[in-house]
Length: 174
Picture 1 (cartoon, rainbow, N blue to C red):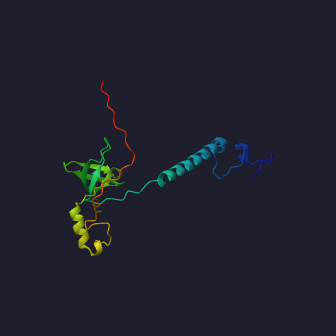
Picture 2: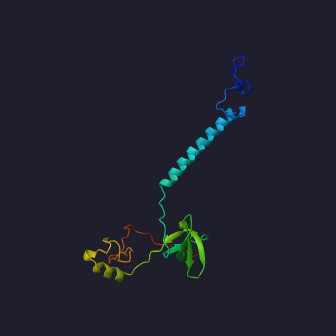
Picture 3: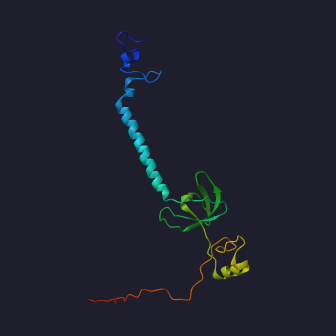
């Protein structure tokens, strides 16, 4: 019921109409909070745009299975110098790796690469002639029966060189 001045009790107490049936303090509707909410929404939109740009150039890492041989990146040297076998799969793309030394460590999928064993040229030639038309059991001529890509055949030609004439090295001894 309006007051004799024409204002409701909420307008008298808070200085404006209530926006809901739950009473709130007048500072809840101050302009500083509206600015803070607008700034938060602007930051969220900028973060989403950055995430979209970064994700556009990434490639997904496929899950690995137990028993797969993997190369592991050394966290200090950043070299892929250790080889191990996956013995367990954890949560959030983490894998338990057993190394030849007997040590067992947890590593994230980001630091693991599937180990592709190189085959010799004789194995590639013998497997390619065993299939019909050079195709494997899977029907793909690019892969051998072990599921690995064969090594390219060595060519007898010499490597291509630049026709540019090189200056002779001049060594001056003092």
